Amino acid sequence: MTVIREYGGRPFDEAIAFFRGKLMLPTEHWDDLWGMLHTKAFTVAGAMQTELLADFQGAVDAAIADGTSLGEFRKTFDALVERYGWVYKGGRNWRSRVIYETNLRTSYQAGRYRQMIDPDVTAMRPYWQYRHGGSTHPREQHLDWDGMVLPWDDPWWDTHYPPNGWGCKCFVVTLGPRDMDRMGKDGPDTAPETRYRTIETRDGATIQVPEGIDPGWDYNVGQGDNLLREGV
Image (cartoon, rainbow, N blue to C red; front, top):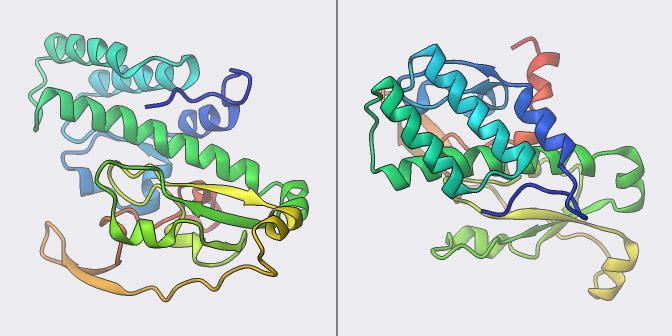
């Protein structure tokens, strides 16, 4: 996982601010919270002790703000497991990676979103291009979306702004008129039709999830402030 840094090695202030804006919320299962609620809550499924969750939050904060590596994070993970006697699901390497990479990637993408929607940026670079992140086992739909250019305010980004699932490394770049000229494009593409699949949740409910997106990931991590405006 690439350390969250701006160009020149500076800390990524927007990513740090996004993560530090979260409140701790103990949850038993990963899907106790759904979608955009994760932009305002820091959770580690199964970490029900407040002190344990606080220490995890501090370890992730160090990874985002100071560049702590996955290897260093795993040392902290092991120490916390021993200190609190935490019994968790999954293997140690897998579980520690999920906690580390999920928080770093969502914080990075939220920070990028806040940068890219700056009015000065959208005026000069009004197009966004979806880029596949080079995953070892890529999702077919993510490959299909790779290279697609849409207006920055296209509604498609409300549900398809990355990351779009566990381990998703996709990202978005901004483009201006000159970039479009170099690409031989005289305008943006048309967003593909969103097709849905029906899944059953842990409590037996059925929900519709866009194809190509993991359940619970069909939201824009950068739009968390909408929760406050909507009074959620």
